[in-house]
Image (cartoon, rainbow, N blue to C red):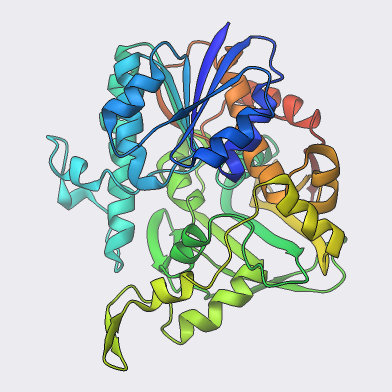
Length: 427
């Protein structure tokens, strides 16, 4: 029987907790957060749950809560990642998070493996720190997790995570791959002001940064909200314009393009939706800047001022119900992989469409938003694989795009139970 610590029981952590509560080989789920109301709320909905108040900025606080656990699921802000990793090593537990960290760059710079001459040349310093943090995950933490015989899997939400598994699935239809597009449209639009269904600070941070792409085998920065691309799939009423967005997938694929992606040279993340439509003019007006400036004799940070006016993502049942009762202006979206390459000597496009319940159906099925359903439960599928031993003795550190073909099949076997399915078109 397995014991699990979930750190951070917001929208995504609580969704995973509900599903793990149904796992027959899970004995106990420790739900930990600094938000006492959030802890009490999720524990009241579980049969195997107990609560703990944990300050994730204090390593000892995490270790105390994690004693005896088999898996630590990290749903916390990225700056907490180092402490959670160290806690997992201290208690000899497997580790999982929803997004690759950006907080290990100083650790990488201080390591014996640091070689500035071998690093990509970015014009955005934040991207270089991100790249260094992922190097630290693989090259510094990988050996330490192998030493204790445990596995750490990072980037396991919906994107990155579910979409990475779908991209791995696309590779089986190609002999070689040239270009990958990961495409997401957030098509759930409320009738009130609610631009984001997940963390507003994370969303706006991503949107205020230069984007990231893999081109000709090299990582590059691209302009935020740049390079518009229009798509209209069969289930769309009108064409949608997708734009560049700072996201994990091209970075993860750059490390694994030879072994897992058939030599892919180019990879892009394209995004659209109400959140992008809201943030783009703010970005163009300089209102997502993190630099201090004077306004009417007072010092302000534009980003912080804008953030203070954005409502948090709903996470409690009564909050989500109110959106359903009001009715949504639109309840749609897409998650698509386009993989271009060769098959039997012919130019081939593999289009993989991920189907999942929308906002209203997610609430009817699980009292969640569509974002909670696909991200929290998409992450839960990796947790399920970890607690059921589906990674077949693998140890060290892997990202969600490093699944074997057998692991991809198992992931989508489990996903189908949640009505998360794949439709593949070969063109």
